Length: 347
Image (cartoon, rainbow, N blue to C red; front, side, top):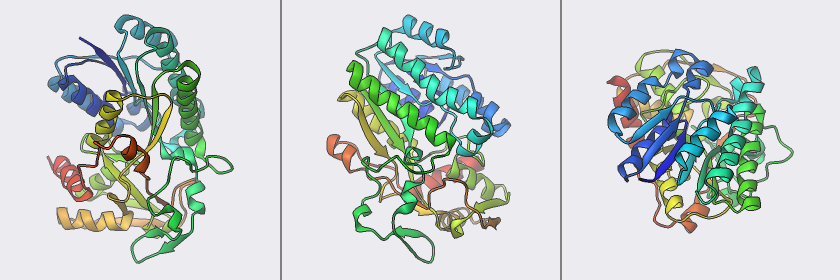
């Protein structure tokens, strides 16, 4: 039986990957030490998701190891000789990165280097999928001309009618320390692909979402927003009049993209991955959608100061991946995603 290693296997994307590929007959080895609980406290704890996944996936083994531990990573790769690697583990918050810069860089950049070098030494022919982020572009997207409407900001520049492409520059902008550590890892993944001819891919994610997200204030926008509304907790909007736009993609559709890449791997590919022009909404629009579905009115306050490096409007251009992998498409629309998250939170 072939083995796939999944890092961050108790997280939103990692757990979806475990379930999906275990059902395809793979033995899944997860690497996850629940550091999200360390980063975000009890609300970030993913042990509940580990138990859920373990109950579903019989051919799943979880190694509670830290990807910063090179010897531990090399040992796992040497023992299992994976046929593919799906790397989702990360310190995911740009706010938290400023408070814990060493942890941020060591997890995101050094941890990725450990995994890449283990791949080169023990599984060089195996595809390496990296869950990157749109924060690699820093606040550069904020330079795009925008138009303000009653509920959102929209691109006024027709060059971006399909969203942000992979060719968008990453230089001369403010990234946040999180954006820098993820960009360092992103470039390492590309370089290991090009330099050592390893099939690697970086998926630069927009807002990734779904019911298995352990959303907190500093990470997991839609999940946390729903929690606040359902449990009548005040939500704070930071700047941009609440009209900032995010594209949302369900974890199932992210894994669908992973599946397509594993079926037709290539060397050193980079793709933007998000809800695109199909699935996007502002905070104000999300408030309205949640209220219409749940019947509960959001309780929120406004702080007229945006988070450092935060995007005003970000929509992923999905055309490059859609061209290379025409069998992939978004299957979960935003209203359906919202219904699912609300239902899960109520349960």
